[in-house]
Length: 153
Image 1 (cartoon, rainbow, N blue to C red):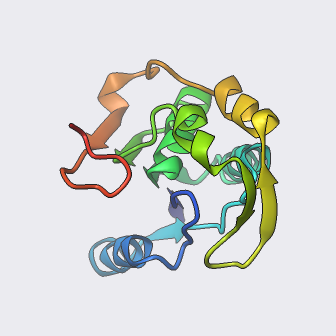
Image 2: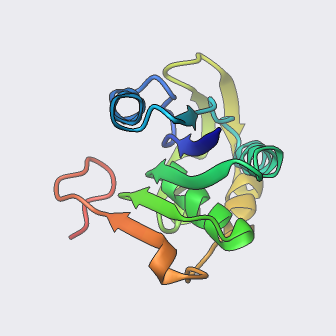
Image 3: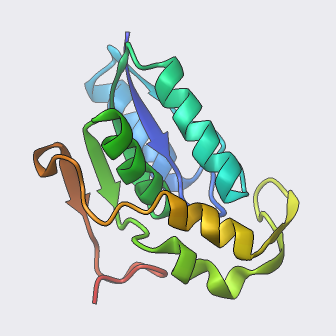
């Protein structure tokens, strides 16, 4: 069965309104396609490893990746690494800059996981920074006005 990988944003989950609506629309309009939507790890290096492992594990059935915000950053990384078609929704472009104000002790608002973000975590995000996409014909950018974090202005 063909699958699409859905990657949620920072401090979000596969049960967010956006993720659930995406899954619902795929089920209604493309029931032959399954949606893989993992709860992404809070720490960047763990999330990067996690999405890489999922892409490798499902490489024979993965037809694309959709990512929102931080998930869009990770989707861009997977597009370049695995040549996957990607849809990126208000993607974080440089989260290692965006998350500077989050350094310190964090509590994931949905999982209640307590963790600390530091310089080493920003370095992990910088290590997989993708200033360009491998194949622009395989990436669809959806950018919206008024996003609470990533307004396109």
